[in-house]
Length: 359
Image (cartoon, rainbow, N blue to C red):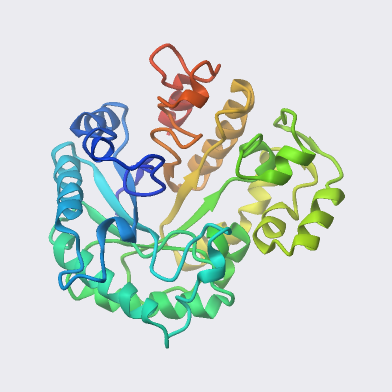
Protein backbone atom coordinates (compact mmCIF):
# COMPACT_ATOMS: atom_id res chain seq x y z
CA UNK A 1 0.00 0.00 0.00
CA UNK A 2 1.28 3.47 -0.95
CA UNK A 3 2.07 5.82 1.92
CA UNK A 4 -0.07 8.92 2.30
CA UNK A 5 1.40 12.35 1.65
CA UNK A 6 0.31 15.27 3.85
CA UNK A 7 2.31 18.43 4.08
CA UNK A 8 3.03 21.98 3.03
CA UNK A 9 4.55 23.98 0.19
CA UNK A 10 7.86 25.77 0.62
CA UNK A 11 6.94 28.43 -1.93
CA UNK A 12 8.86 31.69 -1.90
CA UNK A 13 12.26 30.07 -1.33
CA UNK A 14 13.36 29.03 -4.83
CA UNK A 15 10.20 30.26 -6.55
CA UNK A 16 8.22 33.51 -6.56
CA UNK A 17 10.96 35.12 -4.50
CA UNK A 18 9.81 38.44 -3.11
CA UNK A 19 13.29 39.85 -2.45
CA UNK A 20 16.36 38.16 -3.91
CA UNK A 21 19.54 38.45 -1.85
CA UNK A 22 22.26 36.25 -0.41
CA UNK A 23 20.54 36.54 2.96
CA UNK A 24 17.30 35.20 1.47
CA UNK A 25 18.90 31.96 0.25
CA UNK A 26 20.76 31.54 3.54
CA UNK A 27 17.96 32.30 6.00
CA UNK A 28 14.47 32.13 4.47
CA UNK A 29 14.44 28.37 5.13
CA UNK A 30 16.86 26.43 7.31
CA UNK A 31 17.12 22.98 8.84
CA UNK A 32 14.87 24.19 11.66
CA UNK A 33 11.98 24.61 9.22
CA UNK A 34 12.21 20.96 8.20
CA UNK A 35 12.33 19.99 11.85
CA UNK A 36 9.26 22.15 12.59
CA UNK A 37 7.26 20.64 9.73
CA UNK A 38 8.02 17.16 11.06
CA UNK A 39 7.18 18.22 14.62
CA UNK A 40 3.85 19.63 13.43
CA UNK A 41 2.96 16.15 12.19
CA UNK A 42 3.44 16.48 8.42
CA UNK A 43 5.43 14.06 6.28
CA UNK A 44 5.79 15.90 2.95
CA UNK A 45 7.24 19.14 1.61
CA UNK A 46 6.52 20.40 -1.89
CA UNK A 47 9.48 22.52 -3.00
CA UNK A 48 8.61 24.78 -5.97
CA UNK A 49 11.62 25.76 -8.08
CA UNK A 50 11.63 28.39 -10.83
CA UNK A 51 13.94 26.93 -13.48
CA UNK A 52 16.06 30.09 -13.80
CA UNK A 53 16.96 29.81 -10.12
CA UNK A 54 18.71 26.51 -10.80
CA UNK A 55 19.65 26.53 -14.50
CA UNK A 56 21.57 28.87 -16.78
CA UNK A 57 21.53 27.80 -20.43
CA UNK A 58 24.27 30.28 -21.38
CA UNK A 59 26.81 28.15 -19.49
CA UNK A 60 28.40 24.84 -20.51
CA UNK A 61 27.28 23.26 -17.24
CA UNK A 62 23.69 24.45 -17.18
CA UNK A 63 22.93 23.56 -13.56
CA UNK A 64 24.04 26.36 -11.26
CA UNK A 65 26.07 24.44 -8.70
CA UNK A 66 25.73 27.00 -5.93
CA UNK A 67 21.93 26.81 -6.15
CA UNK A 68 21.90 23.05 -6.69
CA UNK A 69 23.76 22.72 -3.39
CA UNK A 70 20.82 24.45 -1.70
CA UNK A 71 18.49 21.76 -3.08
CA UNK A 72 21.00 19.10 -1.96
CA UNK A 73 20.66 20.40 1.59
CA UNK A 74 16.87 20.37 1.37
CA UNK A 75 16.90 16.73 0.27
CA UNK A 76 19.24 15.74 3.09
CA UNK A 77 17.31 17.67 5.74
CA UNK A 78 14.07 16.10 4.52
CA UNK A 79 15.70 12.66 4.82
CA UNK A 80 16.94 13.37 8.32
CA UNK A 81 13.44 14.25 9.52
CA UNK A 82 11.63 11.47 7.67
CA UNK A 83 10.03 13.79 5.12
CA UNK A 84 9.20 13.26 1.47
CA UNK A 85 10.29 16.11 -0.82
CA UNK A 86 8.42 16.92 -4.02
CA UNK A 87 10.68 18.79 -6.46
CA UNK A 88 8.19 20.91 -8.39
CA UNK A 89 9.26 22.69 -11.59
CA UNK A 90 7.29 25.85 -10.85
CA UNK A 91 8.23 27.98 -13.84
CA UNK A 92 9.68 26.22 -16.88
CA UNK A 93 11.51 27.44 -20.00
CA UNK A 94 8.88 28.71 -22.38
CA UNK A 95 6.15 28.48 -19.78
CA UNK A 96 4.80 30.53 -16.91
CA UNK A 97 1.49 29.95 -15.12
CA UNK A 98 1.39 33.71 -14.40
CA UNK A 99 -1.13 35.17 -16.84
CA UNK A 100 0.87 38.41 -17.02
CA UNK A 101 3.76 36.43 -18.53
CA UNK A 102 1.84 33.84 -20.53
CA UNK A 103 2.07 35.63 -23.90
CA UNK A 104 5.64 34.35 -24.20
CA UNK A 105 4.70 30.69 -23.60
CA UNK A 106 6.03 28.51 -26.41
CA UNK A 107 6.78 25.26 -24.56
CA UNK A 108 4.01 23.47 -26.45
CA UNK A 109 5.76 23.94 -29.80
CA UNK A 110 8.30 21.11 -30.40
CA UNK A 111 10.12 23.32 -32.90
CA UNK A 112 11.27 25.79 -30.24
CA UNK A 113 14.27 25.44 -27.94
CA UNK A 114 11.99 25.49 -24.90
CA UNK A 115 11.05 21.81 -25.06
CA UNK A 116 14.66 20.69 -25.40
CA UNK A 117 15.61 22.85 -22.43
CA UNK A 118 12.68 21.39 -20.51
CA UNK A 119 13.85 17.82 -21.20
CA UNK A 120 17.44 18.73 -20.31
CA UNK A 121 16.26 20.11 -16.97
CA UNK A 122 14.52 16.84 -16.15
CA UNK A 123 17.56 14.86 -17.23
CA UNK A 124 19.75 16.87 -14.84
CA UNK A 125 17.27 16.80 -11.94
CA UNK A 126 16.66 13.06 -12.19
CA UNK A 127 20.39 12.34 -12.50
CA UNK A 128 21.18 14.31 -9.38
CA UNK A 129 18.22 13.41 -7.17
CA UNK A 130 16.88 10.11 -8.52
CA UNK A 131 19.03 8.15 -6.08
CA UNK A 132 17.13 9.58 -3.10
CA UNK A 133 14.06 7.50 -2.28
CA UNK A 134 12.41 10.40 -0.41
CA UNK A 135 12.30 12.57 -3.56
CA UNK A 136 9.28 12.89 -5.86
CA UNK A 137 9.41 14.70 -9.22
CA UNK A 138 6.55 17.00 -10.25
CA UNK A 139 6.71 17.56 -14.00
CA UNK A 140 5.43 21.15 -13.97
CA UNK A 141 3.30 23.57 -12.02
CA UNK A 142 -0.07 24.69 -13.38
CA UNK A 143 0.33 23.89 -17.09
CA UNK A 144 -1.67 26.07 -19.47
CA UNK A 145 -1.55 24.16 -22.75
CA UNK A 146 -4.07 25.51 -25.30
CA UNK A 147 -5.13 21.91 -25.95
CA UNK A 148 -5.03 19.09 -23.37
CA UNK A 149 -3.32 16.76 -25.85
CA UNK A 150 -0.30 19.07 -25.84
CA UNK A 151 0.14 18.70 -22.09
CA UNK A 152 -0.42 14.93 -22.17
CA UNK A 153 2.12 14.59 -24.98
CA UNK A 154 4.75 16.62 -23.11
CA UNK A 155 4.30 14.48 -20.00
CA UNK A 156 4.50 11.32 -22.11
CA UNK A 157 7.88 12.46 -23.43
CA UNK A 158 9.15 13.52 -20.01
CA UNK A 159 8.39 10.35 -18.04
CA UNK A 160 11.05 8.19 -19.79
CA UNK A 161 13.67 10.91 -19.28
CA UNK A 162 13.01 10.87 -15.53
CA UNK A 163 12.68 7.08 -15.40
CA UNK A 164 16.11 6.56 -16.96
CA UNK A 165 17.65 7.88 -13.73
CA UNK A 166 14.83 7.47 -11.20
CA UNK A 167 13.17 4.09 -11.62
CA UNK A 168 11.30 3.99 -8.32
CA UNK A 169 10.55 7.61 -7.43
CA UNK A 170 6.98 8.84 -7.71
CA UNK A 171 6.24 11.32 -10.49
CA UNK A 172 3.51 13.94 -9.97
CA UNK A 173 1.40 15.10 -12.93
CA UNK A 174 -1.06 17.97 -12.65
CA UNK A 175 -4.22 18.68 -14.61
CA UNK A 176 -4.15 21.29 -17.37
CA UNK A 177 -5.18 24.96 -17.15
CA UNK A 178 -3.75 25.87 -13.76
CA UNK A 179 -4.51 22.47 -12.22
CA UNK A 180 -8.26 23.02 -12.43
CA UNK A 181 -10.70 20.31 -11.35
CA UNK A 182 -12.84 20.65 -14.47
CA UNK A 183 -9.93 19.77 -16.77
CA UNK A 184 -9.07 16.60 -14.85
CA UNK A 185 -11.10 14.41 -17.19
CA UNK A 186 -8.77 15.49 -20.03
CA UNK A 187 -5.74 14.15 -18.19
CA UNK A 188 -4.29 10.95 -19.58
CA UNK A 189 -3.85 7.84 -17.42
CA UNK A 190 -0.18 7.11 -18.10
CA UNK A 191 1.33 3.62 -18.34
CA UNK A 192 3.40 3.99 -15.21
CA UNK A 193 2.24 2.69 -11.86
CA UNK A 194 4.13 5.31 -9.84
CA UNK A 195 2.32 8.42 -11.02
CA UNK A 196 0.40 10.66 -8.62
CA UNK A 197 -2.26 12.80 -10.31
CA UNK A 198 -2.56 16.31 -8.93
CA UNK A 199 -4.89 19.32 -8.90
CA UNK A 200 -5.05 22.75 -7.25
CA UNK A 201 -8.10 24.27 -5.63
CA UNK A 202 -8.80 27.87 -4.64
CA UNK A 203 -12.52 28.15 -5.38
CA UNK A 204 -14.40 30.36 -4.86
CA UNK A 205 -11.63 32.72 -5.86
CA UNK A 206 -13.53 35.68 -4.38
CA UNK A 207 -13.22 34.03 -0.97
CA UNK A 208 -9.72 32.58 -1.14
CA UNK A 209 -8.20 35.60 -2.91
CA UNK A 210 -10.29 38.41 -1.45
CA UNK A 211 -8.46 41.74 -1.42
CA UNK A 212 -5.53 40.20 -3.35
CA UNK A 213 -3.42 43.01 -4.81
CA UNK A 214 -2.65 41.12 -8.02
CA UNK A 215 -6.35 40.78 -8.96
CA UNK A 216 -7.19 44.35 -9.97
CA UNK A 217 -10.80 43.50 -10.76
CA UNK A 218 -11.37 42.12 -7.27
CA UNK A 219 -10.05 45.36 -5.84
CA UNK A 220 -12.24 47.38 -8.17
CA UNK A 221 -15.53 45.50 -8.09
CA UNK A 222 -15.41 43.44 -4.88
CA UNK A 223 -13.37 45.42 -2.34
CA UNK A 224 -15.19 44.26 0.81
CA UNK A 225 -14.81 41.14 2.92
CA UNK A 226 -16.39 37.97 1.50
CA UNK A 227 -18.08 35.40 3.73
CA UNK A 228 -17.98 31.61 3.53
CA UNK A 229 -20.31 29.74 3.44
CA UNK A 230 -22.23 32.40 1.61
CA UNK A 231 -23.75 33.81 -1.53
CA UNK A 232 -21.80 35.52 -4.30
CA UNK A 233 -24.18 37.79 -6.25
CA UNK A 234 -24.20 38.96 -9.84
CA UNK A 235 -20.70 39.36 -11.27
CA UNK A 236 -21.71 40.44 -14.76
CA UNK A 237 -19.78 43.77 -14.56
CA UNK A 238 -16.55 41.90 -13.78
CA UNK A 239 -17.12 39.30 -16.50
CA UNK A 240 -17.91 41.99 -19.10
CA UNK A 241 -14.71 43.81 -18.20
CA UNK A 242 -12.70 40.60 -18.53
CA UNK A 243 -14.13 39.88 -21.97
CA UNK A 244 -13.38 43.45 -23.03
CA UNK A 245 -9.77 43.03 -21.92
CA UNK A 246 -9.61 39.51 -23.42
CA UNK A 247 -8.28 38.20 -20.12
CA UNK A 248 -8.61 34.44 -20.68
CA UNK A 249 -7.06 33.56 -17.33
CA UNK A 250 -9.31 35.83 -15.26
CA UNK A 251 -12.45 34.85 -17.15
CA UNK A 252 -11.63 31.15 -16.76
CA UNK A 253 -11.12 31.61 -13.01
CA UNK A 254 -14.14 33.86 -12.35
CA UNK A 255 -16.79 32.55 -14.74
CA UNK A 256 -18.49 30.16 -12.28
CA UNK A 257 -18.31 32.26 -9.09
CA UNK A 258 -21.95 33.27 -8.67
CA UNK A 259 -24.42 31.62 -6.34
CA UNK A 260 -24.28 29.82 -3.00
CA UNK A 261 -20.94 28.38 -1.85
CA UNK A 262 -20.70 25.61 0.71
CA UNK A 263 -19.29 22.12 1.25
CA UNK A 264 -21.82 20.53 -1.12
CA UNK A 265 -20.93 22.82 -4.01
CA UNK A 266 -17.20 22.24 -3.57
CA UNK A 267 -17.74 18.47 -3.40
CA UNK A 268 -19.73 18.61 -6.64
CA UNK A 269 -16.93 20.59 -8.30
CA UNK A 270 -14.42 17.88 -7.34
CA UNK A 271 -16.39 15.20 -9.21
CA UNK A 272 -14.05 14.98 -12.24
CA UNK A 273 -11.13 14.30 -9.88
CA UNK A 274 -13.10 11.75 -7.88
CA UNK A 275 -14.30 10.00 -11.05
CA UNK A 276 -10.70 9.76 -12.36
CA UNK A 277 -9.47 8.48 -9.00
CA UNK A 278 -12.15 5.80 -8.82
CA UNK A 279 -11.99 4.76 -12.48
CA UNK A 280 -8.22 4.30 -12.60
CA UNK A 281 -7.58 3.43 -8.93
CA UNK A 282 -4.72 5.95 -8.74
CA UNK A 283 -3.44 8.24 -5.96
CA UNK A 284 -4.55 11.86 -6.12
CA UNK A 285 -2.79 14.90 -4.64
CA UNK A 286 -4.25 18.29 -3.83
CA UNK A 287 -0.98 20.08 -4.48
CA UNK A 288 -2.08 23.62 -3.63
CA UNK A 289 -4.99 25.05 -1.66
CA UNK A 290 -5.39 27.86 0.84
CA UNK A 291 -7.33 30.95 1.84
CA UNK A 292 -5.61 34.32 1.85
CA UNK A 293 -4.56 35.96 5.10
CA UNK A 294 -6.75 39.01 4.41
CA UNK A 295 -9.87 36.91 5.03
CA UNK A 296 -11.50 36.92 8.44
CA UNK A 297 -10.16 34.11 10.67
CA UNK A 298 -13.55 32.39 10.87
CA UNK A 299 -13.93 32.48 7.06
CA UNK A 300 -10.46 31.05 6.57
CA UNK A 301 -11.23 28.29 9.07
CA UNK A 302 -14.64 27.37 7.64
CA UNK A 303 -13.36 27.15 4.07
CA UNK A 304 -10.31 25.13 5.05
CA UNK A 305 -12.40 22.89 7.30
CA UNK A 306 -14.61 21.96 4.36
CA UNK A 307 -11.57 21.20 2.19
CA UNK A 308 -10.12 18.94 4.88
CA UNK A 309 -13.47 17.18 5.25
CA UNK A 310 -13.32 16.21 1.56
CA UNK A 311 -9.63 15.28 1.76
CA UNK A 312 -10.39 12.81 4.53
CA UNK A 313 -13.61 11.55 2.95
CA UNK A 314 -11.96 10.70 -0.37
CA UNK A 315 -8.49 9.73 0.88
CA UNK A 316 -6.67 12.52 -0.97
CA UNK A 317 -3.02 13.47 -0.41
CA UNK A 318 -2.32 17.16 0.16
CA UNK A 319 0.31 19.90 0.39
CA UNK A 320 -1.06 23.18 1.74
CA UNK A 321 -0.11 26.53 0.17
CA UNK A 322 1.89 27.93 1.87
CA UNK A 323 4.27 27.27 4.78
CA UNK A 324 5.70 30.79 4.95
CA UNK A 325 4.61 34.20 3.65
CA UNK A 326 3.19 34.73 0.11
CA UNK A 327 -0.21 35.85 1.54
CA UNK A 328 -1.22 32.30 2.59
CA UNK A 329 1.50 31.30 5.03
CA UNK A 330 1.08 29.26 8.18
CA UNK A 331 3.89 31.55 9.30
CA UNK A 332 4.09 35.13 8.06
CA UNK A 333 6.92 37.51 8.86
CA UNK A 334 6.07 40.07 6.18
CA UNK A 335 4.96 43.62 6.98
CA UNK A 336 1.58 43.24 5.28
CA UNK A 337 0.30 40.83 7.95
CA UNK A 338 2.10 42.36 10.93
CA UNK A 339 -1.14 43.06 12.84
CA UNK A 340 -3.39 40.51 11.17
CA UNK A 341 -5.99 38.67 13.29
CA UNK A 342 -5.07 35.31 11.73
CA UNK A 343 -1.63 35.30 13.37
CA UNK A 344 -0.61 35.06 17.01
CA UNK A 345 2.28 36.92 18.65
CA UNK A 346 4.71 34.34 17.17
CA UNK A 347 3.33 35.10 13.68
CA UNK A 348 1.83 31.60 13.37
CA UNK A 349 -1.72 30.92 12.19
CA UNK A 350 -2.55 28.30 14.80
CA UNK A 351 -6.19 27.90 13.71
CA UNK A 352 -5.20 26.92 10.17
CA UNK A 353 -2.43 24.68 11.48
CA UNK A 354 -4.82 22.82 13.78
CA UNK A 355 -7.28 22.20 10.95
CA UNK A 356 -4.49 20.78 8.75
CA UNK A 357 -3.31 18.60 11.61
CA UNK A 358 -6.80 17.08 11.84
CA UNK A 359 -5.85 14.86 8.87
